[in-house]
Length: 192
Length: 192
DNA sequence: CTGTTTTGGCTAATCACATTAGCCATTATA
DNA sequence: TATAATGGCTAATGTGATTAGCCAAAACAG
Image (cartoon, each protein chain N blue to C red):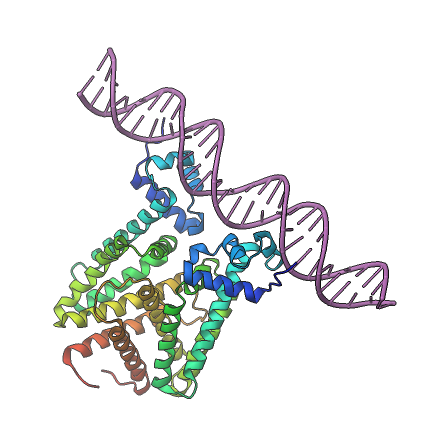
């Protein structure tokens, strides 16, 4: 006996493999190698096998993202907070390409747990929006718009999907400005 | 001898399986079953095996999307065209959940081919933007913003990721309006 | 029209990885 | 200190991908 593994260690190793080697390499075999253990041993920690592990990886990812985002928003409010959150999201994805893929991959299973997991992240945005004096419904629209954009943009960027040499920072800034304008318009009710 | 298969038939069957059974079920075995053939036979059409097949499926998906989008834009211009395109994109994803996953899945391989494949779809948006009198750079920003939002929003929606009961049509409409406003602002140069 | 080549299917065999069964030493605990 | 639970291991099984090599039908050359 020697390894002394636990779920946390294993998940973190999996996240590492995902980021470094690509999500396709998150296999029990690879994981066992990394942890210097034989693959059947992992079943002592994840009786559900690879499937359970992937689910946990997904949850771990969302929790990590939530934590980064929360930290980013500390001491900020309004647009300033939203911008910080969006930057944190984008940076997280670029730093954790594989993990982010895992977070989406598990969408396939469309589980209640997944909904819960994303809720935390989304919740931070909701809180920030509280101070804008919007209706519940308007807040929902704003959060959804932000979520959609952040997820899509980050996914494409992290995969090198934007072929053009134009700086991505500029695009991101423009998009954020546009979205914040949209939110502002909801407040005043200005019919432009 | 009997089947008389060809690439097109096989890819379409694969797309069907992806949409109906989920992308996890796009296996050579399942495909062979559907086509009433033995799995090794498929190698006569895709010498690269499952990997090549997935790549072709990805390309097929982007080509299909481009075609739907193009059709949607016919006879329309400006905001009207953009809205039509966005709706077509969203509808496509919801109708082809599995195929859309395949389109993204292959991102993993970050290939030149993938870049080419998306280019067609993106190109349609570019063309529509021609009439807005924007600089090249501004057009790039707009297209990227739209792409990011469409991909993220559609992916989340098609997976049932938006937990809230608020109608998604409303959110989509609001987001489009917001983005179109952002584009309009680029034109006038109005410093709001 | 006949001999030859190509095509596209098939069976049998191999490989990788997930998973299960059951063994066993160490650790924790009654 | 007995005993139970833990967490590792080896061996065996199962599924799907892939490869090798056979063979009949179709296409084609003369």
